[in-house]
Image (cartoon, rainbow, N blue to C red):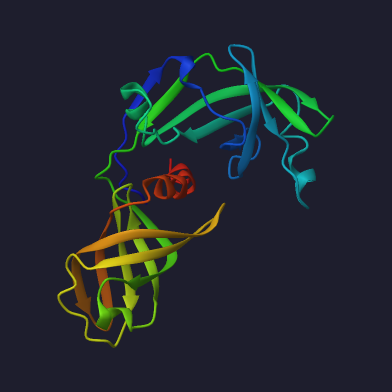
Length: 238
């Protein structure tokens, strides 16, 4: 169950300004429990959007749901803005966009894709930075910048909640770890898309109880990595 704080608004369709290759979350009308992560191939503004057809051993399961005239529901996160981009684009960071559409056609050459209608309306949900989403994400951490702590092995544990700014990390340990506040560390997380991500962070608070240490962690760098990781985690709970 998520405590993610969101705001929903209708926005202008010009907000759909994504680059080919960006993964979109596709929910099918007949398979509501199936969430496909499919890359964007391209689009013509106001006309259509092209997505790659899913591949794999279960492709046949989607044949009827991915046929002409069927409805789809699309979700995606706004790309991370760079310093050179406009203030308007920067405001889109941490926002999830969504829209309904209908499949127009299936393309088989040069590779299999499907074409959906360009949306009349796109809705956005702002993912507020202070909101935490409950999670159960395996991860490991290693302390840095301290000779004593650096000698310790990596700690395997679980990310129990996460936001764009930080996370809660819980792990079992028999080591007497004290005064960890502001201690620098590297958090290693498995992304479902990119494999292992190394995220630089620091300890904000700690709690030890019954052989388990729980750390409140603030991300200090790698905002682009965190944003890409949250693409999967946030979209799954919206």
